[in-house]
Every structure is written in structure tokens, then in C-alpha cells.
Length: 73
Length: 73
Length: 148
Length: 148
Image (cartoon, rainbow over all chains, first blue to last red; front, side, top):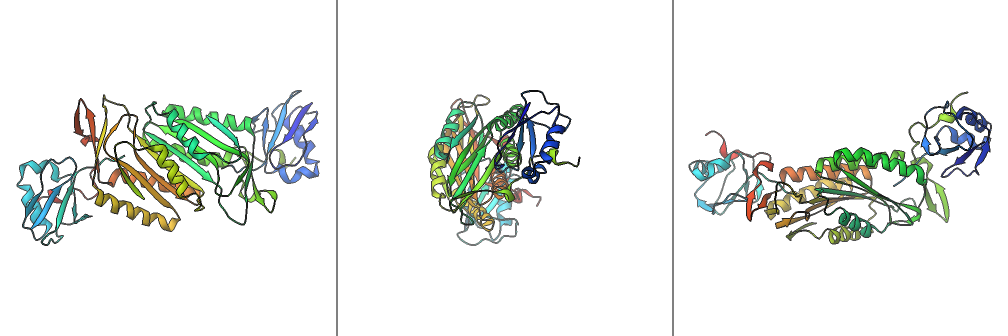
């Protein structure tokens, strides 16, 4: 199982699901109507490191974070 | 008469001389051995405004200042 | 050094302490950038969420990038509410020479705006509203939204 | 505002006072540049001559240039001796937005270096030696040295 957490303004409790790679996470979230507005604009981190490909493998206990558009300062 | 003053590191007391324009000042200073090393690198102000031409006219009581290379900060 | 505070920053304390901390390290230039909440469009203030693990690694990558230039970086940011005319952000660079300091503060602040995992909300009529239209997707965003 | 001091600057006092002075003027960005005397080549410190009338008009021209951008400028500089690790120069910009502040502080500091009527001396072995090789002729210099 991996945990998916939603940062900042995304008002959504963490999910846990089975996933062998980020591709599985993408499939699961696309079917989640609440999330569709966010997916296009979110960056993705695995265990707090930003990643660039859906082929990123996941293992049991991994944490996937979704980071919506930022504005510090 | 105009007064010529030498700023910063130029160790020279002010001069007074008759001059109708900066051209006259240039002539006078070129004959001053002590000043020759400075003339190429100095900016010139008349009554505290920087000027760009030897044709700048001078009148009685004007102050001409020579500003050697600067380094504030 | 990265410092996070609940609420507004104590700007005099931070600027003074950082100056003192580096006072014997032979830096010729110190440039802090102080960001203050502007009164506009009727807001009472701003509020910030910070995701500290990724902010820390972003900051440490910048420290590593500045080190070969002989420069040191510091940063402070607020969490939670900061009212108008209070300050929420200070970024600072120390370097031996001015050119490195001027170039580094600009690049550091601009990358902060584009990449630091911090979310901004307007405080307006007692509500906390995500400032989506002033926010920037982090580089590489949209990974999960591609056509399948 | 242009401030001249005999000897080293009190950096905490100046940075704090300037911040307070502008605290209700709705500026979003405050960038001070602090210049500190580096220990190098065995100097005990630096010493400065300032020609105030032309420095004042140079500064006022900059204030006038910054005003249409919505920016405010401040500057402090030392006269006389400033020892190593003490500070002799602060330039600061306040502006509504960060881009104007970042661009203005850079241009203001660089033009200061090229144009402000201030002369620097090394303090070394009890002597005060003009730092000629680090100094820059003001634009238009050499007027009196042309071939006649």
C-alpha cells in the first residue's frame, strides 16, 4: 500500500491504495471527480522528492504527495 | 576670478584664476606639472554640476571642481 | 539557515541577528529581500501553508549552489496568518563581492516564487481563499493529468 | 533620504528605522544592500572622502528616476575611517512589487559604484593610501586632459 497526500489548498484526506508505479496512482485519481480539476496543475513527489515520470516505481509504505500551484513570499 | 578646487586624493590647495571658459582652465592646469597625472582621469563640475564640454562658459565667482576616479561602497 | 515562524516575521530581529552571525566571516555584501503583505482588494491579510520537507530540500539545494560562489544564504518565512503591512518572507545572501550577491539574490527570490512549496490564501471577510490566480504550477506539474 | 555618518554605520539601527519609516506605505518589497569592509591584503580598514553637494544631486536624480516606478530609495554612507568587518554603505529600495525592487537595487548600486563622488583609501601601517587601482573615472572624465 502507498499513501497519497494532498498538500496546501486541496481539501482532501489522504488515500491509501495499491500501486506499483505512479501510473497506477494516475489511473486511480483520474476516476476521482473531486481531483480532476487539480491533476493538470499538480507536481508530484515520492517520499518528498519531486519526480518527473509516471514510470517512477512505488513500494509498500511509499508516500506520494500532490503539490498544487505555489505562491510563497 | 574663478576658484578651482581639487577633490578627494588630489593633494592640492584651491587655485583662483581668470577664466572665461573651461578651455582657459584646461590651459592653465596643463602647465601645472603636479596636475598632469590627474587631468586625463578627472571629471569636472562647475558650481557642483558635472559638465561635458570645454566650451562651458565661466563667470566671476564660479567654482570649478575636479573629481578624480571614485570608489564608494 | 531556514527559519519558519507562526505568523508575521520580526524583521528587525532577523535582519540584525543574521548580520551579527556573519559579521566576522569577511563578507563584503549582505542583501536581504523583505516581503511585506500589501493592502489590496480589501484583504485583511494573507495566510500561508508551508510543506517543510520539500522546502528544506529546495533550500539546501540552493545553499549547495551558492557555496562555490563563496556565498551564504538565509531564509525566513511565515506559516498561518500575516496581516497587511506585516512581513512574511525574508531571503538573504552574503557574499565576498557585490556582483555575486546581486545576481544570487535575484535568482534565489525568483526561483523561490516559482518552486517553493508554499501556498498563499487571501484573508477576506473572515474567509481563507486560495490565491489560485496568483499561483504558479511547479515545473513538471501535470504528470498525473496526461492523456491515458 | 541620504544619510552621511562619521565612521562605521550602525547597520541594525538604520535597517530597522528605514523599515519602520515605510511600514505603512504599502510597499511589498524592501531590499537593502549592505557593504562591509573586507579584511584583505593586510589592511586595517578603509577611509572615505565624500563630496556631499554632488552626491546629493546624484542621489536626488535617482529618487526622481525611481518615483515613476512607485519606488523609494534610501542611502547611508560613512565618512572617514571604517575598520575591517564594519560597514560603510547601505543602499535600499522599497517598491510595491518585487521585480521593480530587484532591478532597481542592482542599477542603483552599480551606478553608485561608477558615479558617486566618494574616494576610498586603504588604511595600512598607519597610512591612508588612495585606492587608485580599484577606482573608476566618472563618465566624461578627461575633459581637461584632451589634446589642445
